[in-house]
Length: 203
Image 1 (cartoon, helix red, strand yellow):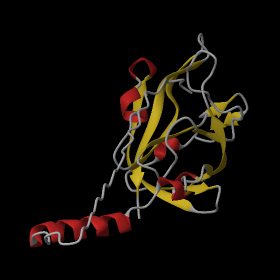
Image 2: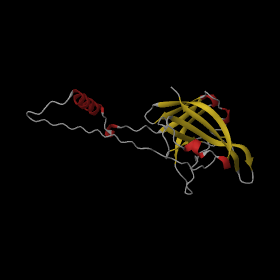
Image 3: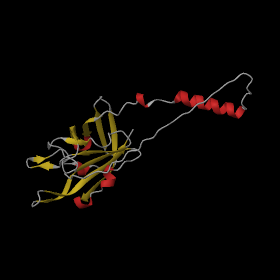
Image 4: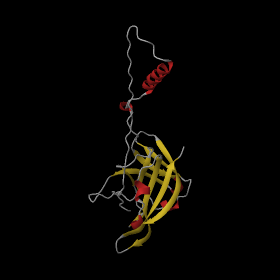
């Protein structure tokens, strides 16, 4: 499993609506154009929703990939002391990079899993078999779920890890699944490549 450091970015937008009105005895009526503008402003104010009512997307707790028989709970992953992305502690369990995007929100949500262990196949052993159109379901803490469809599956040498493609924000909800692949370096004790699945949200 690679420990790629992701560049994350987020944008914050603010909306301000200012309405002013005054009246005085004997004041002239505003022209029709001004009246229409004021009415439009009042309507905009009525439709404004405060951020206090915003409900965050629930965190992911499970991933299911029927095509390759994956059904795993999700560990929460952060960063290791060396600032690289943590990897799951358990071979049979995948993990979600919790410092990044939540699945279903705009951006690239990242889920990592081991390909194998000294005892045999691990949770993402068959990840390389996924093809365009295959379905991935992520179940969230409130019981809701979000589906993604595979766009492509690719293999990269660890020295060429596509950090931007995996971690950089996107305008639409996306999912990246990462595991190890390629040939095994017995001297270093790890695989030389990574298998990455790129997917986007599906209806």
